[in-house]
Image 1 (tube, helix red, strand yellow):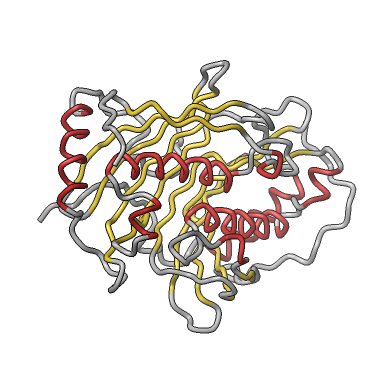
Image 2 (cartoon, helix red, strand yellow):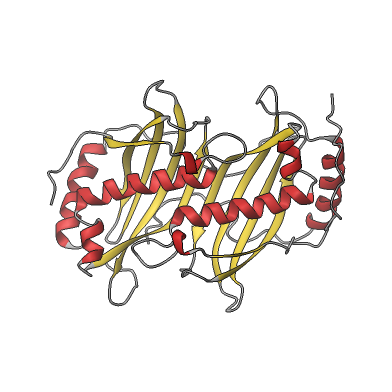
Length: 163
Length: 171
């Protein structure tokens, strides 16, 4: 397993907006923001030892059961992205977190992605408690993230607000 | 100033919910878990939003003719059941709310043969002025069509999965 990173928030994931992520509006398409965020989720899962090898070795999987995205500003082809991750909550088999995507050069917030992840048993393909080693790492990261303020984009309700 | 759209409008569909969009899970949408990846649900739903916008008269001609664009501001997805490569999808769309420049939509994705609910997507789409790249009121023809759609949708029951906030419910 990789060395735990206890920076708060987790700030290791970097990416670049690929040409095939651009749509007819000339910016990254809404679906590909989530492609980019999902790769940041892989980076997070690696921290807990539940990434690619976890599934390759047929131990388990992690499924997203719910997601909320705010699209705050456009990003264009070739833009560098920096994605940070904050743990919000967890229990025996779930993890609630939020990713923030920034333009890595200009610094502005481009989007946020709040997620509910669930651990899945490989054989039964049903929810199951996190493996012990993963839970220990989740607890350690959660302790490091606890002092962080809760981002205003977490827990949002969708609707048209009227004055 | 309201934009006048110079192209022909498609026949308006006021079925409630809108039930016209169909699609198939492409093999490149499948991830190492052997099912459609979370992001491609959003891409598939975005195409269903595109079908709703086309019904308002705001399809590809709207962007290619540089009249305007539509942007998604916010989206919420529930992943209810897995979809495999090649699975046929059927989408229904309910208009939950609207104003002068926004629509609030609720999509359901069903497995088109087995019928089960695979996912839902609640989303806000806003109209954008092409030149200024900022929000602007719907073109008049689109606004008229939106009102006709709203008249058909406004009395539908609100879906149980609409208006969710995320969190761990602890018993």
